[in-house]
Image 1 (cartoon, one colour):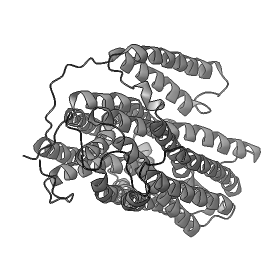
Image 2 (spheres, one colour; image 1 turned 90 degrees about the horizontal axis):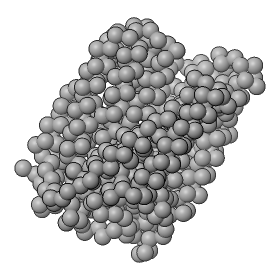
Image 3 (tube, helix red, strand yellow; image 1 turned 180 degrees about the horizontal axis):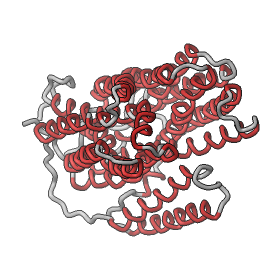
Length: 488
């Protein structure tokens, strides 16, 4: 096909629009639920269980990403993402029909299984059909989706809750999924080179089971059971044993579901470590900033949420600008700039922690968001550009997965820090001074994670051509051995 431009009116415009709508499904779902939790609990009950609405979604989404990503390299992107959107659509309808908290949690788990195929595959498709230079412009389109979702998600969730129709937060996914599926089915076509593949069933089962146990151990440690308990040791022990078995199976597999070279290539190792710290720092802020302001300062939940929303606005702004920057100074230098901004922002947040202020938090959160955007985008594009079509899905999935693992571990570690501070102050979670102290300790932890992010960015190999992003030839959006996207 002829690649004439990157806008929505170009020949590849229908595919870009499909990617944006599919991304919007996941982006809105990431923010719309939190503001409606009180209304959900008031209707179906289960206050003590509601955190699992978020945890089980993250869990099932995370553990399925590597499997979907490998399948996308074997059977094509289109089949995998259409399957994911179909599962997400079905699960959204079931969530809207849920009759109690356990059923809603179960359907959220199914929703996560669908979401695991959406975001990594949309990012992979962008890497397939656009060159490195073109992706610098395309980032602006995709980033705009996240910026809109950052504002629209909480607002819609609050409106549905206020109108006492919280089920609408799930039913709104139905038309979005339907439109995305229609656009992909109509405008995105792949010409796959006929080839027999050997599906790594054993590896997929072992990987999913081991990651599920390890993530459950992280998510429930200190909550469902004590960290140093028989249950905790059993869960982590079983997860480690299954993970070791997975490594042994992958060494012998003809087409491993998660090739071990993902962790051994210097560039991929560095970019995945950066992604891990992005996830850890992000969860520390999103989980504690609203509570810090609501309890510590006495503002409304809406104001606390909007203060945090500046972070998710700063991120896509930086993402759209980072493309132009890494074309001039390289992937590594752009990621280092992002890491430095995150360090400055999180350090400022930690220093300002004892003095709660909506405006200072909103400003600093925006700066941190800029840092995330400048760090996350060039590392992902560098990783994608270092491989061919047949490996791009796995590489993208590994990046998404390590970020999710970072969120899970970050939530556990920073949550433990907060709980320790609260316990040392008498255990009163409603006392403003106690919450301010606990949140400040979390912000210090986030600053330490920011320093690690900067150090990991330093591990990225230098580009061979000074002043340009040259991890791969920019003239080829996808190697000839892969599918050729067409517009019909």
